[in-house]
Length: 446
Ligand code: ADP
Ligand code: MG
Image (cartoon, rainbow, N blue to C red; front, side, top):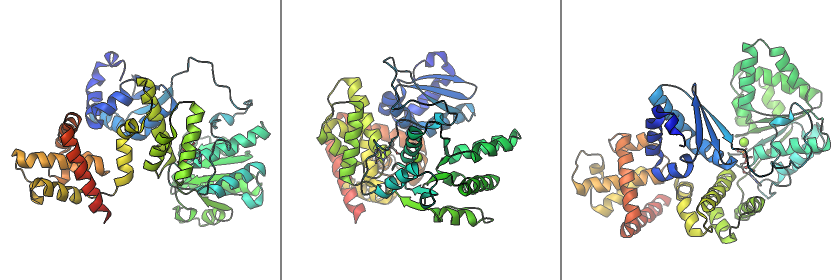
């Protein structure tokens, strides 16, 4: 991290983070980041939104854990985008003075949402909700999907579309988490009346990730009252969730919420197919105007199948890397740079015993040798390789992997780094490892 000289006491924390996530990753994502640390708040200043997104999704937990371990403080991380030196971007439409608007992200629109078979119904229903606010047949609209498939995008697009037609419309976008924390705050500050009022006057309420509200007693009740008040006065309600309305766990005291939710339109966004994934990447590429070939886009789209956020994040990671090093993006660079994501996508389910079995066969050692205390090189080296492969091919944490080998997580970190180093310097060894990985995947598929 930049400016650690101002905070010598934090240096061991960042060293720890570097050890855990690996030097290359640290150099790429964290080292260039400027920060300020004060009273348990770490403010990160980031070159762009995607950088922030990457750190938030991948390293947020590692950073907070490291601070907790060293300082005993549960820190808050604030992500800030550095102001651009170029001319400020003009929004697509004139932003009206409207206290609710600030929560809407004007870059999520219907125009830049790629419509496809996997999301067509959700897309059309969102448009219908925006054009015919509060119409009985579209109310409430519930969109659900697994993460990263466009729910938040559609909610913002609805809000932006409504404001385009009527800049003074009262549209509120809010996540379930925000609703919960505002509710708790309003109780603490004895302001529940104004809290209530704010919601009841809306024309359209867009609540993202509603699963966060479930099971939080008073809050669920407040949500339900808000929901009813809006619904009864024919105001538009749009909700998103990471599970079906039937799977949401409401308090037992009220079955009514779930039946109300089921009374409107419920639509799922499914995973996009290959053509759609390529179309999404093309559109993102064009929007940032970066020269990157269709072959590279197709390679990324083939490798990342489950999550559009990851798909997009990978593209921007590649763009950031190539921009920084002034090189043209190629499949080879993409393969190397995105190896961690591509491998994860394909092999989340790989079983550690399969890794041990194949590595054991390859080096002629027995299963029990992986867990034994024996330190002779003929056993220790294959064991280290198996640990490295477990870090690459499974989604287990370092301590979990350690346990599988009867060791602690620092031994796993050491093994991983040793093997990585060898891979970086010895092409014959790399070929051997690739061969082992292919065998592991072949067995795991059976
Ligand atoms: P969710 O809320 O379902 O987790 P998001 O709406 O945050 O997902 O989508 C993740 C990212 O993927 C966003 O940047 C969004 O713009 C993009 N995205 C998802 N689906 C599409 C699509 N069909 N067309 C264009 N971009 C999409
Ligand atoms: Mg979302």
